[in-house]
Length: 401
Image (cartoon, rainbow, N blue to C red; front, side, top):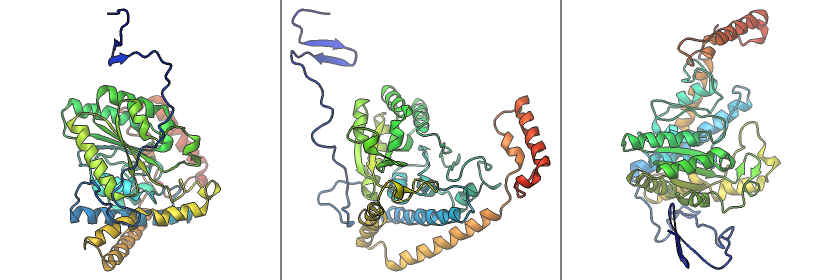
């Protein structure tokens, strides 16, 4: 009901106070949102820091998997440069976001990744051989050779297959989260994306519907400062990504993405909130992509080699976390040497096996979409086979027909 001299208006969403002054909301706060961290740059615990306790077993596995991911990236990258792989993208510099976040989740949580989260699969038990099979697209690849390298997927491990299309995984994650909510599951959906993904419409649609439907989903943004060659300063004027959550009514936090202990604690706490309170949570993890965006990129064209080297040394997530586990008596130089030697041997063997394994049959290009292939798809297959018969020299001989 409207009355004269009313001080408050009832409006959908709550009461709104009136003011006789012209007041615009500031485009930004004077101070930026602080970044949660537990370990300093030297791997020492910050005084009075709040964090979720991690057992020796979990801490050692977090570090071991970060090392494994780094070795895997280096070997696959070199294989691509040798012409043995068509494409590759590393997670160098972002290992803590991968592994520590995965450690804070449960196998029942459903993952909707981008293309820089292989560490989540690694934590869940995806083997080095399975990684190699996918990158080489052989007959043991679960995608049957129909995806680009590093576009992994595993139904068994609740890890949806990576889509190269930026940010399309975000709305999918919200839908899955709402399904988990309807089924009263003790689980949440988790989706990863880069800062560049926040420039896509799917990001905004996903946050809005997640907030409105109160879906238990974790939005984990890897803000590494660059969307391929586009710096964040050319993407948005806001204080990073964390403030976008408030605009949509989503609880949010900014975390040091190169601090494994902080990432573990933030994701662990966020997961409990999301499920207990049935709400979405946005986590902005500040990090840096030390490697090139992919093997199709030369990042020294748009950023200095000195900048890359500084981040790799001063803010290295592996060395910080190693210092902490060593201070607890959980790690040693010998353990480090033994781990790196073993993983390198296993990785090279997986590479050798995957490279020699037969490719999937040509027929797999046309299967798994329709129960009964339509006439246009059958016609396409016929045309492909006719082309191969006419120009066999242009077709790889190791692919069975």
